[in-house]
Image (cartoon, rainbow, N blue to C red):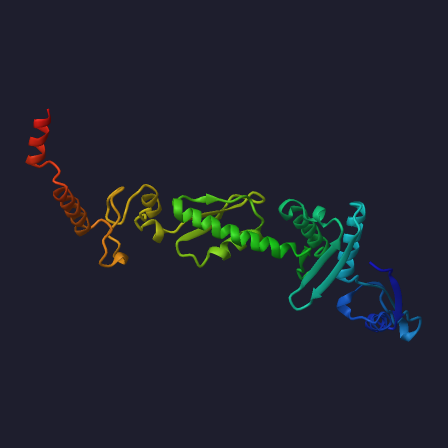
Length: 283
């Protein structure tokens, strides 16, 4: 808070108006206390003016920036703070820059989430309208979003294959919403959360529609174990039509070679009766 300043006028309203003009602000940006109300006195004599004291409310961005500067000084970190306030949405966007941002992110962003939570408490202290804080560094939030969405899709594939539920690690509400949103269009799985904060988890399970369907045959298993398209295991492959009229093991080629060998034997008179008789005479 800034220092209190006193103002006096004939009435409290006039004193308040004078304070607003001097401080160059509006009534919703100040706090004031009435020190002494005006009094007219008897017959207008001995009248006293009204006295008030006024202080200008500190801007919420100044409050947040002052808190973060003191926090980072105690952590011995040199951090540049970029801040943008969306008055319509009541959101303060904070981007942190520095050399050791990994320390601020922490394991799975837990340190960054904790700093964001503490900053939200400071920003909304004694405030009627809630102001949301969104803190990021080195585009970590977007990178984490992509990682979680890919994780959700891979878990869904595993669940549909095994038909067993999968329980994810504890996540904050924002990351749990990312899991639900990534799988909401997949009609074969369903997601829900169980447990209490900060250990609340997302569970991915097959939907009732998919659970009622019969399991598919594992064709990859059949191929690896030698089943062919004809239902036989290890059988001969079907005839390849790409050979055309030429059959590599056809009956006609075998008959030709057989006839050729027989003609050779006939020409050489191999095994004839004359040769056999001549052999007997020599003996």
